[in-house]
Image (cartoon, rainbow, N blue to C red; front, side):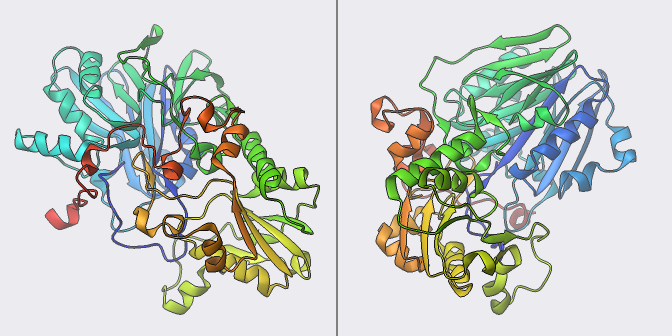
Length: 489
């Protein structure tokens, strides 16, 4: 949701995970549109914790509230909610990037066009945003944020036709991954990129229609899941119902497979699959491919739990909570000295000695990024008395950066980019280390012939380096430097 960047600062306690960028929600035709949007964003909070925003429309005026922090921090006040009048609304939660953040980057972004007011929220990342931005600035456009989302507003302002025609004109100039929700005076719009990299679903509550990043946002308000928004589809929600426009040629779907591995909530149904069941099946594939003699299977909580359950069932081993997670750790509550940074993993995880002592342990986690957290967890399990520690990862090695809305380090900072699996095992201190194979991952997703059985049906570029779109902003070497409002203010 921002121009390609490598962050200025690092969260000292939680910097070794891949991070999703954003979650979106939209509703048309409900008298409590703002309240339902706030609840939907609460269900999508895992997709972004930096900031949240809601824009509503009462048919005449737009009403907006955006703020830094969690959904509950911003929309827990009766006075705030009372100001968000109208029967249609959109909302957005933004991923918690490290470094300084600025309110002008918080979405939804609002603009006044000659055809009326318009606000938009975005999940994903545009791989030609920097190039488009440079061209627009040269043409006289003045940007108010550093988010790639603002590019589409300027492209729409320069286009001809009604609002939907302008949006289609703008979309045809974009590259990369996106799910947008937008609001106008008498409608809510949702659109998904032609490859369907990022998720977007359609639901219904009484006579209201809803758009959301995940089905868990429908569940929280008691809405019925209708279907996915198709790749390349634009839908308009208005007083007459749901209208569909498909302005792009049909393309091979390349949904982000990491949604199944880690990003989506386990209770969501994504891409037609139960996320929880998919993660269990990945764990079972891990056990088939790389099981070792062991006494117990232990997840790295919380994201490793479903895969560990699948592994344990396939290996016929006890599943135990050998690591307990503290759910009440904020970003920082103490000055992060070097000593505190070293202890940081223990603020979030603690070994359950009673389950680990004297045991041969299979530790199951979803990924290894830099490897620093895995190293500390293996060390912690050994210190709790484990006789052997074997690490199993429910994704293939992450060797390449993502440019489609997932915050990853440069490839050179990814442990798997630089080391063999055996070298990685030595680095983290495990007796053995194994990842699910790319074909095993595809089998778990219901593609029994694996990745090579047909054209790839997922975006798996972070594992394979096979990027499904052009990376215009990175052609010629390196991502463009991130513009900072702090630097230019």
